[in-house]
Image (cartoon, rainbow over all chains, first blue to last red; front, side, top):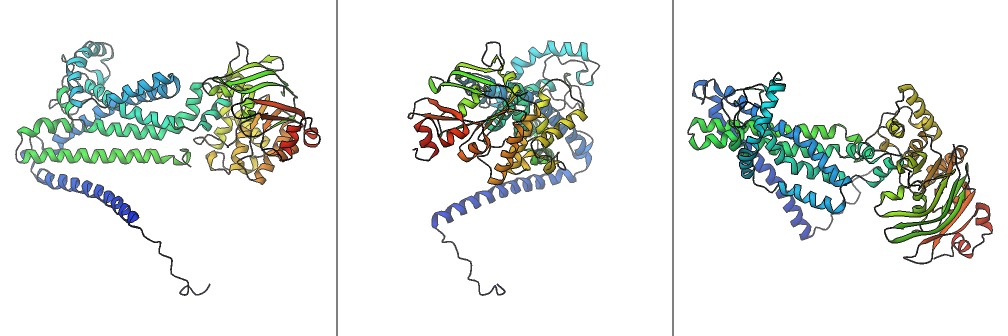
Length: 315
Length: 259
């Protein structure tokens, strides 16, 4: 036991070609992801440097880079957060209905229809939003301004076209609904029978069973799904570019007026064709900001999910 | 608290499939009744019919009567939720709520009863239930830790604490020790002997020594063949079943000559 040198060398497992090929492919795929991510980051940073180092009066608009990108970041976050606030409760309710309440045939059909929402191209959502939804929301916005106008969100004057921040938030909510509800449905259907029966055997009604066993178990999955949805809402371009009548409104909390901040992605799409030189670098710098925001959102989601991992039911 | 159970002509179906046929028996209060029999003979199904848990499976239904102290469990005006509040259940695999602390697990059933309980009353009840399940000394310093961090035997006793916290009249146990090691099994068996002072206990077990050790009365379930409904073959005092059963099939099963 004292001498370790006399121990036989660890036996090399026989390496088979199939194993080597699979391990190599898997490793290569993993590295490729990192290379692509790094490549995107390097491109964004190197192309934004001219805009970052330029003096304030060279940047489009007036007031320099911060005052150009600031409202865009604000508009991006505001529209995505509205979408998330509307979509998450709705998606969870749909998922619960499909998993626990709907008769089996209806559940299958309904799940299919919700998934189908994800297959609609975003440009179609854009047309739907501008021609159908926006005009129908105007009377509702008028009512909001009259009755709840004292809240900064609903301050006037109301947009006469309905192409407002709240409208785009609602359209984005519909767009992210499928992904959030599909993931919620998946985690809800994975709740072990043991846990649901434990609750029922204590004399829980179906709703109490859901509160006791299903929602706590599925919470981290729902958060993960909402963050994926948030990622989509942050990056959505076409629908926002079509619907939102963005203007250089700066940072404003008014959701139903005609003065709205544009979002980063839509702004890039709208400005890029007419931009040259430093203006392009400025747009890329705003893209870098979007990249960083998405990264932060993902890290935040992971942190939220891991925070109570002791209680997650995974152990 | 403990109540008598009378079952008459009970048939249990899953859809069109008849799983259990023609069960007649009476379960005495403050006693342990063991149900034994080969796998698939319907003893767990029968147990779950006693608190209407089998209805969780779509298409499951019963014909016949289950009467607890004069109250028909399957009366048209009886809510299964109320039945389950009176008749607690412990499952084969320990199933504490993984997202809840030990304390919250025990309190879960009490919180379902809408009436507000003060913090100190709740503390008392949790302590009493955990003491009743012989778990208090092991967990009193970590009541806020997740229940899933306990050992299998401790988790099962936590589930028993959760079931007795709501003061049920009957406690049903579906192979409560089958996932436990012998020492934890002994702890649960000791606990059952204490609990029968207060509760009527019905236990399904594959362990015949366990049935012989803990129960006063034993029921033997069997089925004639695959696809046939399970039947209650013999229902007698445990001593008689294990020494001089009335039926040949019981004797074969107990002595291991079966199957």
